[in-house]
Amino acid sequence: MEVVIDNLAALGFSDASLSLKSFDVRNLKLFEKVVYHLVTLVRPGAIQTWPVLSRKDELPFRKEVVEFIKSLDNPRFPPIEMTTLLPNPGGTKCINFLLRFSQFVLETKIAALDAFWESPFSRDCDVALMQGKLLTLSQFYESQLLSRLG
Image 1 (cartoon, helix red, strand yellow):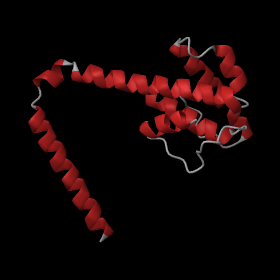
Image 2 (cartoon, rainbow, N blue to C red):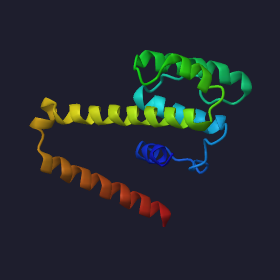
Image 3 (cartoon, one colour):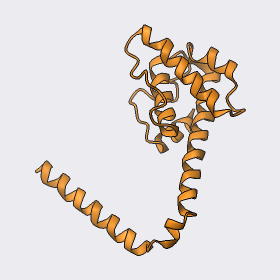
Image 4 (cartoon, rainbow, N blue to C red):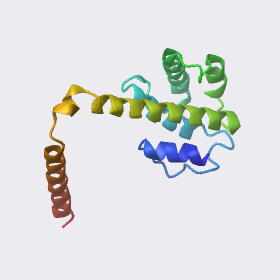
């Protein structure tokens, strides 16, 4: 579970209730938050039934998640596993799924970065100029934040 937490942190997920024992037992609400976050990192807008506010929202959400996972056509995610895991997310099957899915999302993000750095745009850009602009921009936002804080 430690690796899952590290993967989620690297992917920008943060929730006070996430701990090493979060999925030792069924934890539907946290599972839904984690899965939604991971899905939207791969394909923003893929889940239309968010947030899940009541029990009647759970089924449409689960259906969308299952369809999304099927659309990946990846042997890491067998469809039968999803249909049994989504209504009852807890235990080692849940943790294993979150590990595989978070690793998949990390790999997808890294591949996108690799594609950027191999693109003609990156070869034509002046790295020092880009770094200077990013530094100026970060200093500007830092000064804006500090002025708001007083």
